[in-house]
Image 1 (cartoon, each protein chain N blue to C red):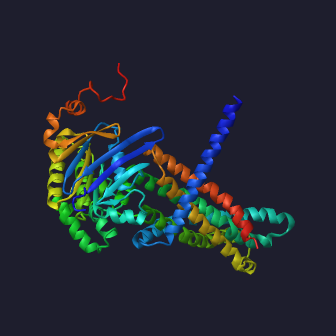
Image 2: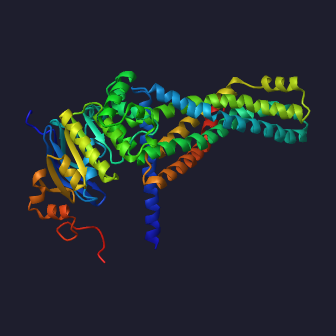
Image 3: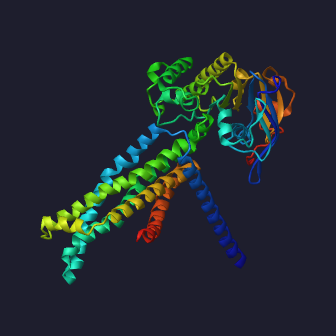
Length: 258
Length: 258
């Protein structure tokens, strides 16, 4: 059991009507590993993440977290399983109705039953880890820039010291400098926690910075997986086209050519 | 041509049945979660304020002018057969049994139902509801239960206040404009008023409170497609609340008649 992957997807299929988004997707994430899944828009990266989190139910296949099959779990069991995870959403998904500190402390208060005072202390500590001062704690998320919102989202993701953290397009919508700040924070915070992480991205620079391994998803299946250091020399035609950002190659685009 | 017509009817029927099934499941889930822990007291109190306290001005104004108009109109009608003394009784019965609950329900649907649909709809399209799930929090218990419970409890209280203000409105017009004696107006108001007149109105109000908050939550929860989707959810919440209030009012009246 100790050698089993932290997260394992086996032959996962998910369709929306006639659109088969995930096709026999299999993927393992080892304990303490940082895996980045790259791929173009519409290749199924977000759907894969939602299937792991239980936000979508796959039609076929199995998903294991710490050896426990999570597909078809009752809601209460699913909630328990999610207590060991954290998630940074693409646009942070902070709760508008709550101040920054309550956003960060949400999981501690609601899922772990911690009292509000202790939870606030931890929230302020986590905010400082992502470079935000205690003066930010009482602000409304709506008053923050996207970069700050992402940092608050990251603080929320790590607040409960989760064993697994998911990142959905962490650098999308940020300028290059803020993107680099977020990448560094993700790398430092997750290494400090020793967490396993799954990141979905189409930002190559970001992927190489935070990944131990990189997987390329195309049309709902993994077409290449390997160490981040080998991405430039993979010899895989799909990877080469994606890394170079070349229009010509095996990756077909859903656009009409002039 | 004939087949196309039949196919269209079939499609509409299937879509309607699907919507009814979806709404029934949502209603069952909402009712079930009213009795399941955890109970979010802080959120419930906030919703009591939103649904109840902040609706007082609009419900009070509606009741006041309805009572005033009712006194005038009944006076015109009853004077045709020399039954002006029936004005206080008809005003109070009309208000308590019918007008206060229905008009309050409609006003609260416009104010609160729309706000609930917009808030939850925005949470849906900005992934805040997904964020709740990833933080091991049941969105039904966190978002729907406090609102529905607040609706069930506060609307009868609003209607009770509306009853009093409405009767006061009728009293003002009757004594200041129509030449009624103040003492005999009050005596006639209470002499023929039975407790079941008031109670049947409060039962109706409770059902309308459930309908308004449930419709707001349902349409918000199922909104898709960004800002336009949230707008559509808001409109649908108000329109469906209006229709359900008016339809259920008939059946409740039949049930509560004796």
